[in-house]
Image (cartoon, rainbow, N blue to C red):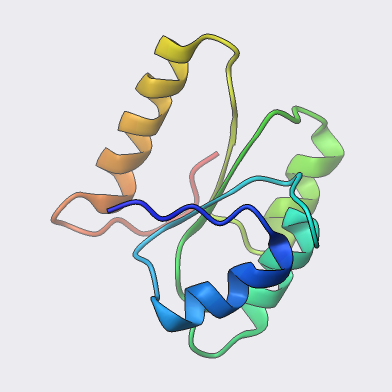
Length: 107
């Protein structure tokens, strides 16, 4: 099941109400940046252990470094082609949502 939240200001309430197995987080959203949301997730005792993978259009090395320093488990740059995005999402599903949970950082 996939739930979409487009407003950074309301995402934490949604996550607290329905803790996910994985968060795919865009850096650009309304209400708060993805960095703000990531920092808040890591600071929340009920959510800090949830894997967060940044899925964004930004390939800026400074964004990658900042996401990692804030505790992102991975950083995936969204490709323009729909087929490539579907492949990357499938790989994320396999890595983070397979029956045997994985640990570690994937970049």
